[in-house]
Image (cartoon, rainbow, N blue to C red; front, top):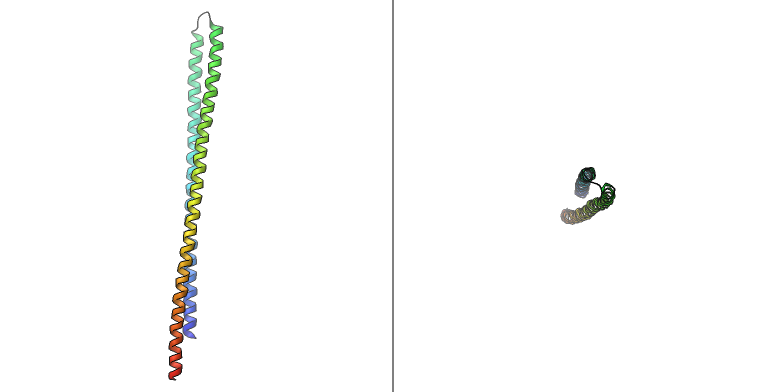
Length: 161
């Protein structure tokens, strides 16, 4: 009975240690996931700011060039101004479309990366859980074998007594 109780205590302690280890590993995976997502969000925000600044810079250059062209125009100033306005509007529309496309690409890449990270995390958690179950099954088998051996010894001692 003492041997069986000792075996049960040892098995309980081993199960507790394995559960603690599993919980620690899951926390580490979740912490890494949170860090990666935060870094990706910061990188995306930075890229969006850069794209917006680049867009503003292009728009300012375009406006400056258009103003210079209008200021130096001769007698056809009104026609040139109208043409310049149409061109500027078209260019602004194209640049806005390009900016929107680039932002969508960044957001699509972010969503894809997050989805891939979540799938990888789920896979790692499943693997950790399967590894934990496998260890627990081996531990139980070893404990059962140890108990059977102890029972055999006790029976032999009882028979001898």
